[in-house]
Image (tube, rainbow, N blue to C red; front, side, top):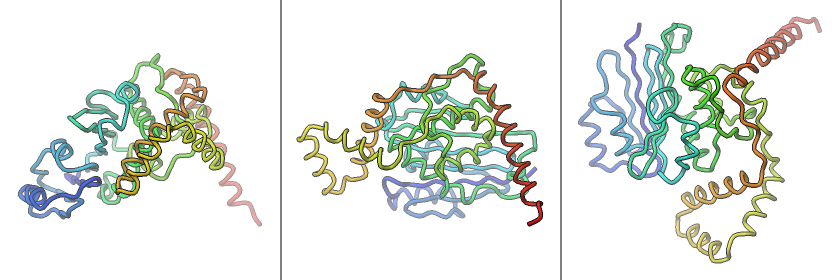
Length: 298
């Protein structure tokens, strides 16, 4: 089995200083290090540093992949970006397929996958790692804007890893689970989520609001904000604080929408798994029809 390991880190909110880059270089003479990234791969050795410590001190995202069918994505977000109580419904406090850790002013979200069955050729037949960061990093912005679908995918990863009891209730089901963003689809692929289980979970997810309806809802929400708050928001926008302002307002708007919409009934793990067979049958029938259409003359 390959000893291949791939490490990639990205700094998003603030570039690495020269001193920080020098500290990282002291840990690796071969790594590609810039003001926004650290990338290296190993075939006989290992990283001379603690990835979790680096995430606390330097970086906002980390992708790891190993040839023994192990991979993980860690995202660092501001500590006030997510509600601790709500997040506890999706993630474990330590270890497993999806966990969260609180470190001072930040929270670290960790999606992981491990397998020893030998079924996943991506780990054994090629060097898995390069390319994942570019596909997965947009998840961070989605989370900062109040999109909880990446959190729900993490909870499904825990279900796939048999970490949940049969009678455990699912966390709040986000809208649009059946129409994932490109980054969310990449996350499902990265975690090797059972596609039929994902389809079963998504069956009860309401469709996202049409763009016109979403705009009208945002206008209705903004109309209710105090004038002083709107003036303060404009001041933040023109003084270069647009990113932080967008995240803050997006989270508040998402919470307002949730308060006005009836939440889908929460299902147990057993109920979601019961829908997996129907989803599988539907998928197989669809694939069969597509194959027949391809070989039909004319």
